[in-house]
Length: 264
Ligand SMILES: Nc1ncnc2c1ncn2[C@@H]1O[C@H](COP(=O)(O)OP(=O)(O)O)[C@@H](O)[C@H]1O
Ligand SMILES: [Mg+2]
Image (tube, rainbow, N blue to C red; front, side, top):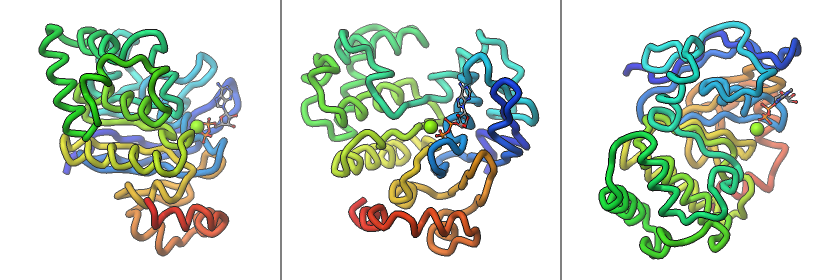
């Protein structure tokens, strides 16, 4: 199977300080890759670099990041805007960051969809409600008319993910999408992402410090520590039979999460 997104020997620095070192991996169609590591290990930096979303002081100093054969690092901002959203969608820990608090979910969907293609309001709404139904949202019409402040944190995140998916990206980059949510709601968000993979064959990079989320979702796991790749391979092997001491520590250090694994 061809790779959708490939990192080859990628180094990233902020100012002159290197924070990501020599990372290589490939993401294939429909694959779910969990990027696991403690806070500050470089997970967000690594995925943001693909979309040119590092702050001004952040720079890929070595290596290549390519999407369907195109070197993303050589794109101008205008070209990158064609990729962001429509080809590679991204969601964040706090859905409030991606949703506007004072406009309805419906209005935000119309804006997002019309920014990328010509589509009339009725078509866009029909497409959105169809996706809401597929994702088992309770009252799609009500959700369409809701303001983010009227929704729970979990529902905001689920709506943000659905909005992102309405542009049919082939890759979803999800940066700690469940970290701000309580366990029961985390499970719904995890299930939503799994459903999207089933429905659309979306490839997903799930960034998480929570091993139970990785265990519930991932086909492959990449373990990062201080910007270095500790381990990369099939989730079954890495989560059940880790060879790396750091991975063993991650797995054993948090018994609370191990118990949660059974729930998720
Ligand atoms: N905008 C920035 N400027 C300077 N250093 C940064 C910036 N963003 C992140 N870093 C540094 O890069 C390292 C990795 O951060 P990050 O990618 O956010 O880790 P993670 O997502 O795994 O918690 C950290 O040491 C962090 O302090
Ligand atoms: Mg982060």
